Length: 104
Image (cartoon, rainbow, N blue to C red; front, side, top):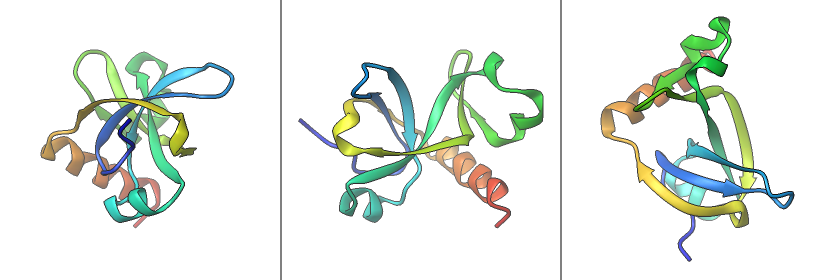
C-alpha cells in the first residue's frame, strides 16, 4: 500500500472508529515523508462552511472546498486511498490560504 508523500495530495482517510472523509496534505513533502503524522486540511461541502470562514477555503470541482480553517494531524495508518493530486494553480491557492490563516 502506498502512503502519503507530497503536499497537495488528496486522500481518503479512515479513523479507528470507522469515520471516513477526504483530506488534502498541507505538510511539506519532506515532513510528510519523515513524520508518522501528516498535517492535512479537511475537504468539506461548500455549503457547510460559515460565511466568516470562506476566505480560508480553496474551491474544488463540484460543491467542495479545501477547509484551511480545519487542519488535523493524522497518523499515516489512517490513509487508505490516494484519490488525486491538486493542480499547481490550486496548490498555490492552498499556500496563499495557509499564509492568510497563520497571518504570515
